[in-house]
Structures are given as C-alpha cells and as structure tokens.
Image (cartoon, chains in turn orange, cyan):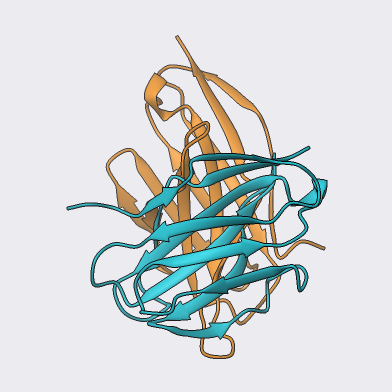
Length: 112
Length: 114
C-alpha cells in the first residue's frame, strides 16, 4: 500500500466551479502536511501547508483529520490557471531526516 | 534571488552508460535533497545532505546510484551503468536549515535511457 494515496483524476471542471481533492496517508507518525502544485513538465511548488485547525489561502482551503489520516483541498471559483496536478505530501522524522512523501497527484483541468 | 538550478535539463543515455546530474542549491541553504519522479508518479525521495554530510541515502534504489556534495553546496547525482528503468525526472530540492524546513525544488533533469 502506498504511504500517500490520492485519486489520480482527471477532474474536469468548468470555470467558476468548486472542486475538492482528498488524500489519505498511512503513517500515523506523519507530522507535517502539504499540498504542492505541479504544472506539466515543471517542478513541484508548495501551494500550502495544512494545519490541524484547517487553513485558508484565498480560494484554497485545506483540512486535516489526524484521526482518520485524511487531508483535503478545496478550490473555490476555479480559474483556468488552476489547471495542474495537485500533490498531497506528508513528512515524518526518521534517522535525522524529514523527507517529503508524495502521493501520485490528482490532475485538474479547468475548462472555459 | 536565484532558485535551485539543475543541469543538464535533458539527458539521453544509452543503456550501460554512466551519467552525472548536477544541482546548484539556493545559496546558503544547508539541506539538499534528491528525488526521482517516474512518469505519472509523485516524486520519491532518494537521498539527503546536511552541508557536506550525507545523512540519509535510504531511498537510493541500487548501488549504481551515488550522490555527493563535497563542499556543502553543489551536489552531483551519479548513476552508473544506466538501465531503462532509470528513466525519470531527477529533482533536487534545498531548504534553509533543517530537513523540516520548506523545500524549494529545481526544474529537474529528465533522463531518458535508451
């Protein structure tokens, strides 16, 4: 079983729609949680960290449920420029390192 | 300021050749990571340096993979006797201090082994 599981999509949504992505992680020792965005043939870029209390950044809202080991990302009022792959990421300390553990990503296409 | 840079951006190798991939982290960043991203997958951790010390190499898939960062800045990932399954994008990331800090990724090197 992969450590971080995501629905690969694609999610095809019209401009202005609200779309939600979910992710589950298997390691209960996970301490930090993130959503990264990756455009085609580009490097991953940090979209937002995810906190237990939930957090919002403009049109983006992230939620964490530690008990269920579940992370979500909600995008409101989708824009064409939101089209990308969204990577769910966790990290946990091990042997002096805290590597990022990525899901496969969920592809989003926002259509005009 | 300048971000993480990697070279070459694209590399085509014949099976059995050795390749060397370079990463220039953000100036002053202590931590440096290498990840491998196969097509349709998320990046997977390969190895981690804090300054010149390689503290974690648990993700290196075989002893054909070797990484170094001799002066605590530039790093090189070397793959010996490349195989087709080594075809992937190799991403380098750096962070300001510890491994738990925000990691900034370079554009990657796309390696194709024929």
